[in-house]
Amino acid sequence: MSVVLVTGASSGIGAAIAIAFAENGWDVMAAGRDEGRLEEVADVSERIVTWAGELASSEDCEELVADTIDEFGEIDCLVNNAGIIIRGNAADTSDDDWRATMTVNLDVPFFLSRAALPYVLRAEGSIVNIASDWGLRGGERAVAYCASKGGLVLLTKAMARDHAREGLRVNAICPGDVDTPMLAAEAEAAGMDIDDYMEEASESVPNGRVAEPEEVAALALFLASDAATHINGTTVAIDGGGGA
Ligand code: NAP
Image (tube, protein in one colour):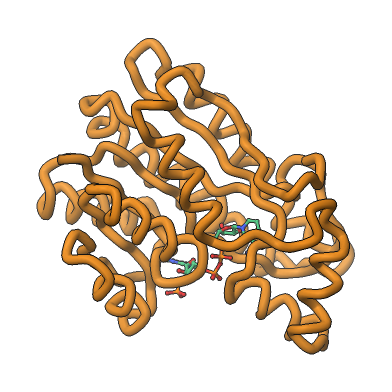
């Protein structure tokens, strides 16, 4: 039995990751906030167990890890996927927007990685962090988001170096635009029709389209698998040729 803990599993990429792992024989702890959408994900496979709650403090993260151990007895892979974006350049990003972004996108992955460390080490397993192409090359009007995702990329590399000889692997996925509710919210925030927004986003990608969440999930599954045992401390862009 292999066990994966996935955050942000109630929506978009996280839901696709939870389902992909379950369909490939993993037992899944699917964490999110929206209980209704979590249940829809759990309906896909009886291997998926849900955990609903806000993740912000180290205590929240320790509770989620403890509940996962109570449920399954082990954690072979942690997927730090939950994330938010609050748009703003340096002039118009408030203290609250900065802190909220850092909390979800960087504090929580660190707190969860630390809490899960004894278990993923025992399993000689892995951690997969869902960062962003904007964590590699930056983006417009998203200073907090870019800084948080850049931090997540280097948390990945630092932890990989520290724990490689103990058998743990830590990798990051850096997607470009992916067709999820986050992208729909971006369209709404920009005051754009979703179809126009998707067309514009697709045109900016060399491959001519945005990614599907299932494509990111397939990469996460590969990075967690035994086929990837020599892949460690790396960032894999999935951006249709965007060059991140
Ligand atoms: P999404 O559809 O908006 O889903 C975000 C998930 O994070 C939801 O499950 C949400 O839970 C959860 N979440 C947010 N804040 C939380 C908190 N405080 N505590 C617990 N859970 C929280 O986003 P997505 O597009 O799938 O994005 C997933 C990851 O991919 C994010 O880290 C994002 O930055 C990254 N990414 C996305 C894109 C893209 O174009 N979509 C591109 C690059 C990177 P509830 O819905 O239950 O509230």
